[in-house]
Structures are given as C-alpha cells and as structure tokens.
Amino acid sequence: MSAKGILILIGGNEDKGIDTNERDHLEFIETSVLARLVKESGGTQANIVIIPTASRIPLEVADNYIDSFKTLSCENISIADIRNRDDAESTENIELVEDADCVLFSGGSQSKITHKIGGSSIHKILMRKYQEGNFVIAGTSAGAMCMSKEMITGGGGKEFFNKGAVRMGEGLGFMPDLIIDSHFIRRGRFGRLAEATARFTDLIGIGLAEDTGLIIKNCNSFEIIGSGMVVIFDASELSYNNQATTEVGNPMTIAHLKTHVLANGYQFDIEKRNIRVIPIDKKKKQLN
Image 1 (cartoon, rainbow, N blue to C red):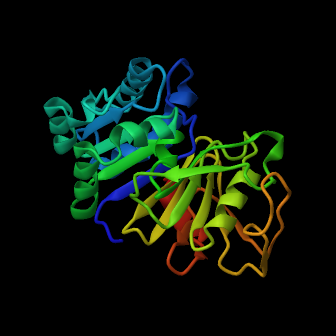
Image 2 (cartoon, rainbow, N blue to C red):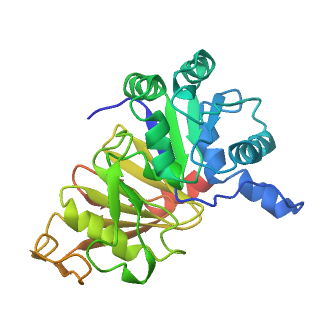
C-alpha cells in the first residue's frame, strides 16, 4: 500500500496544555505531540476535525481538544459527531471531512470506531484523501489502534502471556503492516502485543507509551515523537513459535522475538525493519 498522506498515532494521555497555569507547561505544549500534529497538518490555519466516536462522553472529549488546539493558536477546529452509521453518511459530516486538512480520532473504544465508521462514506473519503493528497489522519489511544487492518479489540489482566489473552478484529486499514497497542507501558500490555505479533508474524507490533506517538510518511517509515517510548516487536526471525499449537488459556513460547525500544526523534524503516539512528547534532537542531 502507498499513500501520500501522513498518519500520526498517539499512545493516549497526551499533554493537552489545559488545567494548569504553569508557564513551563505552556512551553511544553508548544513542543508537544499535538503541536507536531498541527505542524504536519499545515500550521495554525489548518482545518482540523475531531472525531470523538470512540468516547462515552464525545462532546466533553471534543471540547478538551478544542481548548488544546486553541492554546496552540489554531482557529479552524470542528467536531464530526458520529454516534451511529447514519451519522457517518450525513452530508454535514461528509463535508467536514472533505474540507479537512487533518482528522483526529479520540480515545475510548476502537470497536466503536470500526462499527460506526468502518466501510462508510466517511471511511472511504478518509482512505481516498490519505492515499492521494497531503492529508493527516491522527488518532490517540483507541483512535490509534483502529488505524491498522488487524486490530486489537481487547484482552488483558493477569493472563496476558496466555494464548487467547488478546482479542482481534478488523480495523480501518490505513496502515496494514502494523498492529498497534496504546498505553503500553502504564497498563503492562507487553503480553497481548507479543501474542498478536506471534499470531500475525508478517506484521510489526507497535506498543505506544502515553504522551508518545509516531509519524508515518509514505507508509515505509516512521519517526518517534513525544515524551515516552515506542516498543517495537518484529517476529520475522522467530526460531520457535508455538502459538498455533498451544491450547487457549495456556502459556505460549516465542523465541527470538526481535525487540526495539525507541525514544523521541529516532526513526524506523518499516520495509527494511531497521532503526535509523539520528546523529546527535541533527537531533539538537530538530529540537531547537
């Protein structure tokens, strides 16, 4: 798959620059994940559409993002309030997405996004704009997890490392080469992403820490942004994998699962599956 657009996947709980009056916090939001989203979308005049479908409190969540983008001096922020399949076919929401430079899917339940938007007119417009033009599709938490074709829908608890601990479904398919998990460090999701990667060994597992994301351009590489880390699982060189033969509920064995831990500014080549190390001098210029 090739695309001219940009995907921005965020691990959740990104800094929004609100609920505080501290000056240093304001300075941080200006170099934050959301600030980079604004830059990639074309700047403060970009048309940004928030899609809070995943959330149980969609309008409250959308209002928080509106406040955050206003903090970043953005002026053209809209909400596509999609709560059912009919909303994903409405003329008003279609026009919002058609005119957008960027759409941002909020956190919540990724299955709500796929059930209400997957296969709809909105979904088709997003795919066309992403493939054909300078267009940004962003998602945080559940909004990031739905971007893949093979999507984690749930699973967890103490049985993380046992077969069947992860549930899978079909995502929106913007980035079919990846399996994405969010809140990866704080919620201890190592096991479920490992199982998902062992099940789909041709795909790359991506574990996003909170306030951390990646920017994917041309579908062939990504850059890490934010304050945390991204954990990458590459199962292409497994020497042993008993996922297929292990009974559900029993522990799995996976040998030689290649793992990378990357921080802000580093890059990963999806096709070649290797890290691009950025020289220190170049990293300093990027941060200044």
